[in-house]
Length: 323
Image (cartoon, rainbow, N blue to C red; front, side, top):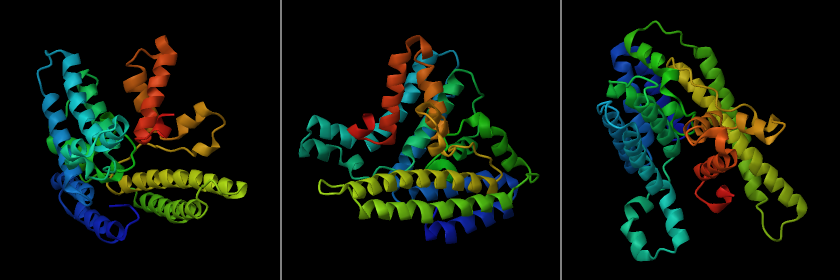
């Protein structure tokens, strides 16, 4: 289900918004969780099932006695989550590169027959961050599975981010379920949603049409090639900008303030500044859970290469993304 689809704008969003503000506070989180699962399972039930399994796995493993080895707990936690991500997103790419035959591919047809689930990379990194923070004692484990699952599955940030840390929104989720005294910014919310939809329809979609019209080919002229490159560049720019803006607006409808994830990246003056602006929460995640975990500046060249190889693969399962 897409933010700019008729089913979302005319049915899903009005229904969830109305029910949320009519229900007593104690039912609000359960409503958001149920709505988010419907939102994610709309295209296919398999990805939604594995998202729920991932949440259950982390909720259980983070409850194990603190006396157990932290590295072992972290490894078990991350292994299951990355395995699910690999099977749905990188299995086809891997089998193609090792020259796997039809028999091997049929053995993995359960995963290969599913289109890459939207948002699987976002929620996987979000769950990993939560699990590691709990295991390392940075945050308290959330005892309520409903509250934890709503944090992971919340539909506003599920498809295109931001990648939220639990400590950023824990108090907000607690307030939703405990009191009606929440300062809802409806005017600001609908303004952001409207701006995002305008960028999506008149920015992303128009640029996508141009990119298709002037698709690159060996016979393309220099002008056609330039238009194609520029159109594609602005297509992904407006697309991410639009979704990031809509996500913050949707969050405000329910009293949730999501972190800024996009800061006009094409205004950047150098590559370092660009990565501080483009997908801000992903850059912070890679810094905190990969770069620093590997030793940071003590092995700068190695660690920064690892970070950007992972960053490339995260954006797409293809060699051009690795490069």
